[in-house]
Length: 119
Image 1: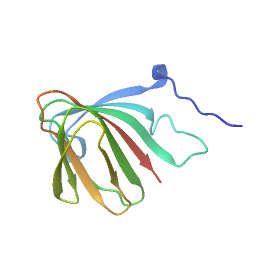
Image 2: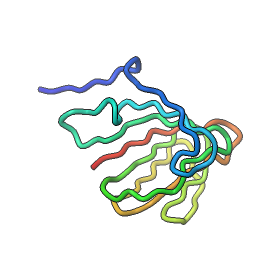
Image 3: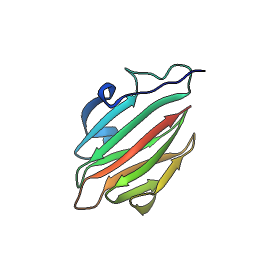
C-alpha cells in the first residue's frame, strides 16, 4: 500500500505579483507543485491560495489540465469563461480542460481557497 502525506512543514510558500495578469499579490502555499511533485499521481498542483482585498488571479485557460477551487473563507467574484458569479465559503468551482477562469477578492477580508490542478 502506498501513502503520500505532505506535512505543513513541507509546504513551499511563495508570493507572486500580478499572477496570470491579475492584480496585487497572491500568497501560495504549494503542497504539490513544480518543486515538490506527487509521484504516482496526476496532480500537478495542490495549494492554499491567499488573496488580499482587491487582489486577483487573472483569467487563464487550462489547455492540458483542469482546476478546482474550494473557497475556505472570504468572498470574491469568480469568472467562468467570462461569466462572473459571487462566491464564498464552501463554494467549489471546477474549470474543465479547455475552459478558462479567474478569481478576484471583492470582500473586505482575505480570501482563502484551495486550488487543485489535475491532468
